[in-house]
Length: 286
Figure 1: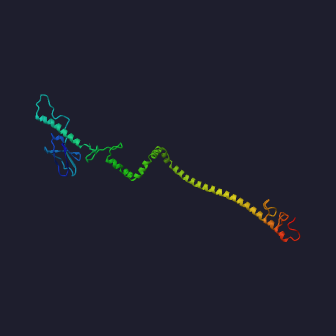
Figure 2: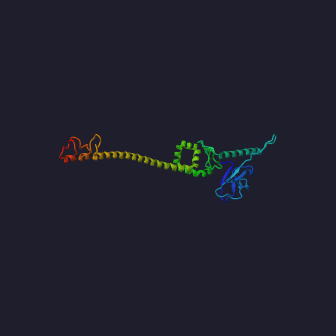
């Protein structure tokens, strides 16, 4: 229970409120409604105060005493008569000031048994904008940043991923000037990307051409071999002006119908035609 003030709740009809504590002069008394000082106060009695209009329903009406400490209530003089009234007035000033100090201390935010500041469920107002990471924040700061906080909450997995590559992020920050240059020249960068795609396509085509060239070379080689084999085959089949292959013999045609002397003039030889038609001489002699 407070010693120097009392709180009431406005009901939109009551204008007179009790003063449940002592005071020495009405100048020490004040009334606030939701923290706003009321003017035009009147005092129907020493224990009541009346406002000019009824506070709205639900408002906080506070009647408070504030003792003046700018001067002592009694200034004792040497040789003067010490009266009870002077002693009381002097002590009342000190007593009231002490009560108000106790109330102020009781209303302050204090450390609880767990070494934490306890506001006692009261609203803390006039909190400045935070500067350091450990500063308290006000409602305006939260309201301004809530969309961002909500967004971050929705991508907490991505945030964790970024935290895991903090060194890479730091490297990117160090290269921000170069990144800015790239961003400025993004049209050229995109053109390079398109050209790289074309180069890759052309590289594939070049590989195909190289493969085709190798295949053509192989085909040419095979064609040459085939032509040689064809010439040899023709010689073995039809040649009649000597051996089909030097030192290897005569063609089928030479053995069948004769030639220009090779088969026909060989002792013990002779072509098939001679063997079939000769009647006047020996076939296998010169």
